[in-house]
Length: 386
Image (cartoon, rainbow, N blue to C red; front, side):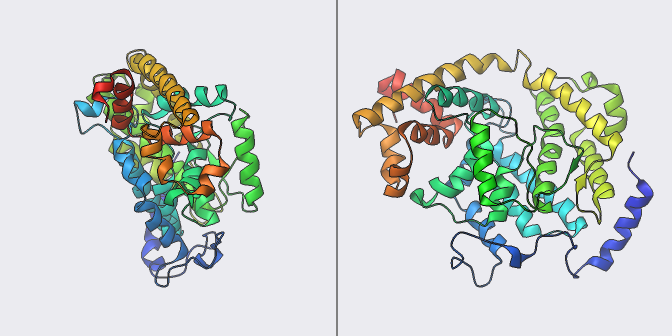
């Protein structure tokens, strides 16, 4: 149960903390490290520079054209959530929690804005479809958090990457809203070698215990869940997949039935349990009902037959496009969009480092839903090609 008296005490201290130093558990600006330390801004912190580089990247702009949960729905209802809205919500919730906890808000914002850059078109369904092709072509499993880091490291700026700090890069690859954790405690001794080992093991299909290196990264990871759990319910109700009265009564009694109520309850739980500690956590009762609500969402939204009826089209078209692009690279087809819109804009450092299948993976992962659909039509109905 949330300790409401403790929460009131915390809120009473906020005015005293205003303008003073960060929490002892926060990541300081001077701790920032990046591959090229000379690449710095004179009037912004390193983390603010990272945030702005992400914000103005092409991958960030493409968020608005990518599915969050319900594929194709933006064609008929523009108020349905997309990846851009989700990322904005994660950023807002993270900053709300981080401000109360006295953490580095610029680091939090940079991680939050960049955490989903590697998401495929059509959300997790597109991710599963692309993963199958990657495995068949021997380049290991596809995971969007790994691709997010790959984008900022190796794809952006024509292949040069954004040269982000280790702390932001770690936070991006360490978010995982699918894993239910009551307590998130930072693994502060992580190194670049740890990240490379994690990537290798995940691509092989291993389950890896993995925590962010900073408390700020932990805040973003827990906020990812807070941001989507209630909003996905609102979208499902809007799309007539659910009725509000279908929600588990005990979860409604504790968390509420609307996104605003659920977010408020979860944020208060995190603040009350995490204030002045070296971890980010829900209290046990809140965690119990959150897990139950998440299980409900999986059964009634994410894996429901009427939601997944578009899967065959996504999987089949993903298979077709992957093979088309592999053939286009092998044959040097300069008219192919993988050349015109992707490879022709990459520097030798990218072209020489990655295999053909990895280039196809990266091109498809960067696509918006609309672009993907147009490419499918362009290959199957050439007269409609872009």
